[in-house]
Image (tube, rainbow, N blue to C red; front, side, top):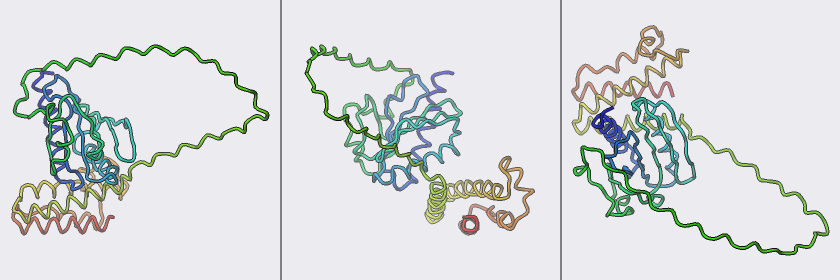
Length: 283
């Protein structure tokens, strides 16, 4: 694959994640960590959220979005704590996207970084200004990777100290190891309905502001989700776009009304209202 093709795939992935972040009110910033001009299909992102309690909720939304919009091939959770999650996604395009979901306090310095979405400016202020890379100075040719810092010389091992330990009068009682608590997986069902709710709200704002093309795109995405949901509720788990024509149910009849007659305000409001009613029925 040519370098320009790799760069285009990476930038498309970054731009898509930035657009997603702009629609998620809990996300304050998205940073790209690492030089965008390296000859690699690896993308390192830091998604900064407003509160630590929102880390897992945002992670669930990111996972749903990546699975449905970017073509997820595999996923690996590298680390998970209460205040941050680190995940590696391998996409069908070949891009390997590592995403750190954290608060501003958990950010760490990187050799290169740049903001692709920033609502507050706090994330940029937390990073070193001298390592910031602006998008307009990125090279069209592969750049050399930074040389790794030399490893410190190992310290000499201390001489062993021999200490006489008296035998205990009674054998110590065995110490029971505490059982490891199983980490709770994010509630995918909750993430699904949060995504639906936020998408409906975003569509309403788009219609109110006259962004009819954007509103149409959101309505189309919601309709696709409704098709899958109706099929699954009727025992169909594949080929949703084809199978929906053969489903016989009340929701299918309502689904037809979600196709707007045009891109005018009245048609879009009507279609979105039917989709909202359908999601309420299927919730």
